[in-house]
Length: 309
Image (cartoon, rainbow, N blue to C red; front, top):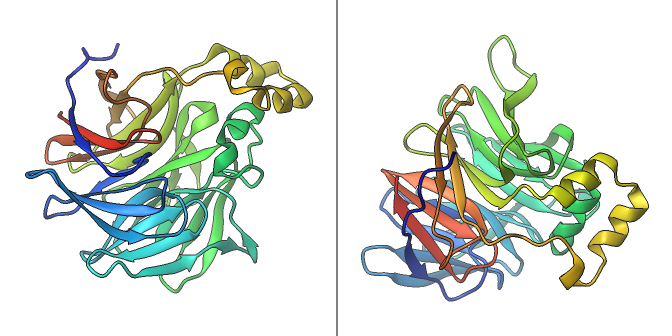
């Protein structure tokens, strides 16, 4: 059962859809918005400055050393963005000569290797509801080596979403949104190359995930389990799934107004479950624990939020 709802501290951001958040060692919080801008928030003062413009739609954000951030831009590709000068470098926008359709989230290892997700090879971000309903199982976990080589690590993932790497880089955890579970893919040791469930039967659909400074894997639950969507996944024929997400907005399955995040230990055991006050902030898609404070982003909100864990 989720812990009692907590009051959130809110920080206004000049743009809608703060989909993900990351915290710099100096305390600055970075986020991206639907208009393609990357913003830097100074929590102590509430001051926000625009760092860069990607020209696309920033989703997952990670640190890339002290001077740059990694941006998963659904339209422009995997980007390295300078924190001070705003310079944007495209690290990759394609796999095997084919442009990615739905770049989503990433984790950076100590040696510079990047694991990242392409949520669907069928639907782009603008049609994310189509991917939820049709459940094409075309998502992928990808790897960019330090030399720039890009390879497919896992395919057939049911809406590949958030990525988090173990502190010792022995494995990565991937959110499989449509399956409501987390997968662990081993990178080192006797099980290197193997994939197993990390946490299953989540209470809703996991979006971005991250490794907190507390060593836990934090998970944003974007929306609670939807019985209609679950029924379509189990029994719905392909033609019906295609029709459902093309219905008028008022007739489609709706994202409920909730705000929930969870945390799992290294064994995949649930150790924290926060059902938050959703009146001023909802549809949490990004979560980042840093020194006891949990920061939240949202696909729809023009703000970021935080609470003490």
